[in-house]
Amino acid sequence: MAPGDLGKNWVPDRVPAPAAPAQLPPPRRARPDTVDANLAVGRAKVDASETFEEAAAHLSPREVFSILNDGSVLSTVLQKP
Image (cartoon, rainbow, N blue to C red; front, side):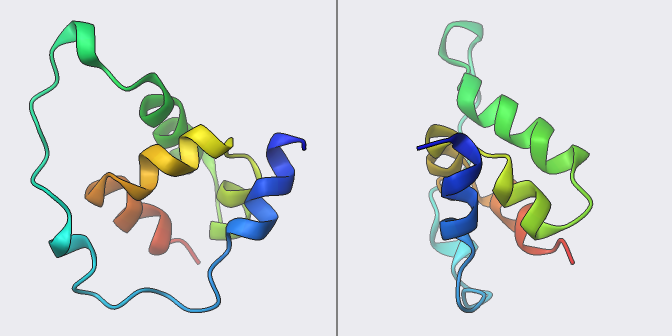
């Protein structure tokens, strides 16, 4: 499966309730040896994308998993048009 294939399947049928990000654990302070590289790359791809579909199409499965576990990036991607 190509990385772009997952993005097409990742688009939700509906946007989660606004309370969903509030249910995530608070962000932890990252130490240099514990930086989540998948989250960093995923965040960069989300920031470089114009739309939700474009962001989702370029994310790998590991990047998707990391984004779904980070409230701030998840909120950013869900706010894309």
